[in-house]
Amino acid sequence: MEDLVAQRQLMISIAEEGMATTEYMWLLIQIRRNGFGESWKDRSEIPDGKDDLALQAARNFFVIDGIPLISSTEFVADVKAKMLQPPYNCTDCDDIDPATSQVVELADSMLLYAIALNRSIAAGLPNPTGHELVHFALGSFQGFSGLVTINKNLTRDAVFLVYGLDSNDQQIVLMRITEDMTNISTSLIQDMQPASVVWAHHGGSPPLNQPLCDYDGSACPPSFAEKYLDITLIAIIVAIAIVIVAVALLLRYRRMKYERLNELWKVPFTTLLKRNTKDVIEKGTVQMDWFFKYSLIRDISEVKVTFFGLEAIKKKEIRKQSDYLWLAPEHIRDPFLAPTEMGDIYRDFLFAGLPAGEAILLFG
Image (cartoon, rainbow, N blue to C red; front, side, top):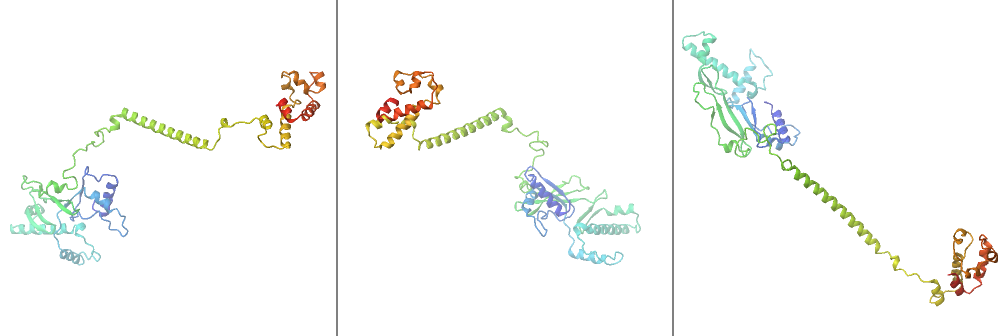
């Protein structure tokens, strides 16, 4: 993954997935020879504001890259000038980047060919074959890409640098990885930084070879709820029951409070004393005119003496001898005669002719 935009997007995705932690270490292999760089920074015209998010993941990245180029700007300018000349005649070859164009490796290859050919000529083989020429390539020389060493297998000894970020988020070489086929006892890892520097963003120690929960999560220790499921369920049920009871008691309390407030403005019916109309009139404690008294007595007489229309009720009443004083003569002569309006009118006339006190005593 050589593209800086793609690297930054990868870092953002890692952070958004919650994987930018000390449990993970991300290894990025590239051949750009420019080290870690600042790939977490947004270089677009309209930044997306996710640099801090990408940096969180970048701290857990190790970058393995080739040794930096030692070619100067003069070398690059010379290459561009040569590309304009025959046999290339390239008029638009002005964007040569040594980090991506492999122009430096090509230059080292030409140097290696020239060195091997000079050695062959010096050995008396001016026109060597390819098989003969490669044996004169053994050895080391300083090329444009650094020290070039051709081993006995006729391959170049690889040299890589491992980059990371220090505690200040600055690029640092953590170790050097090299291969020496002429001396197999030579350690592959050289110039390694202390563990506190290498794992500065991992708590000072490397991540586990195997996650605590294993790769499929099967080794995770059970949670409290899983370990004590019965207790957890009972606790939840009790908590819910307590909440329900508390809500019910609160609602009951509020209802009782409203009822108590409503009772404050009410007058209990049992505390009311109904005054006897007879006593009021007889004792004369209340000032009334005779018209009011007459109206009051007449209302009582209309309620008390009405007989017509209430035949079904009056038939079952047991009459006293005194009740016959107020009956019309036709009803006295015929006890089974149905009540009539004329009979009630007769009683009204009798009632209206009595003094008020007697009317109340007789009909009250």
